[in-house]
Image 1 (cartoon, rainbow, N blue to C red):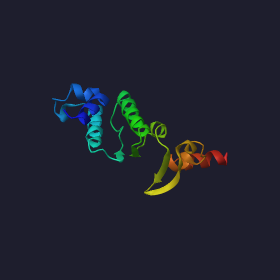
Image 2 (tube, helix red, strand yellow):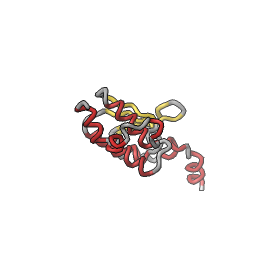
Image 3 (tube, helix red, strand yellow):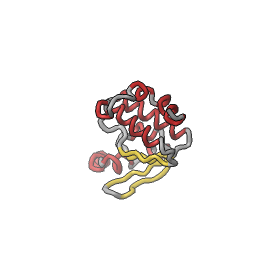
Image 4 (cartoon, rainbow, N blue to C red):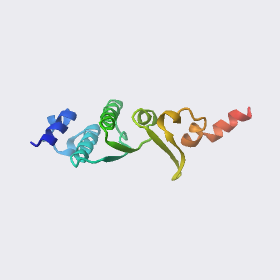
Amino acid sequence: MSSDAEELMDRFPVLAKKRNDSAGSLSGGQQQQLVIARALLSKPRLLVLDEPSLGLDPKMVHLVFDILRELGEEGLALLIAEQNTVRTLGITQRVYVLRTGSVVWAGPSDDLEAQLDFKSEYLGAESVVKRLEDQ
C-alpha cells in the first residue's frame, strides 16, 4: 500500500476496516468518507463538495464536518454548497449566500450571523420579518 493510501486509512479508519467491501455496501456516512478520500488521492488544492451532510445521521454529519475542518486547517481550500449553515459556518472563513441563483450576501463567516437580514435573505422569512415589523 502506498504512503498516500496509508495516510488516508489513518484519517478514515472505518475505510481501513472495510477496504475489502464494495462501496455499495457502505453506509451513507462511510460512502461520503470514501468520496472525500478518493478526491484526496489526487492531492487537490481545492475540494468542492455539494451537500456533504445530505442524508447522513447526526453522528456522521459531525464526523464529516470534523474531517472537513481538519482539511481546511491543513491548508486545503474547500468550496462547500451546504444547507446546514451552523456546521458550515463553524469550518469556513468566507460565505456566499445564494438566493435563486444570485449572491445576496458575501463576507466573512463570522459576520454572517450578525447580519439582521440573514434570516430574511437565506431562509426566505421576509414575510415573517415584515409581519413582526408591522406589529
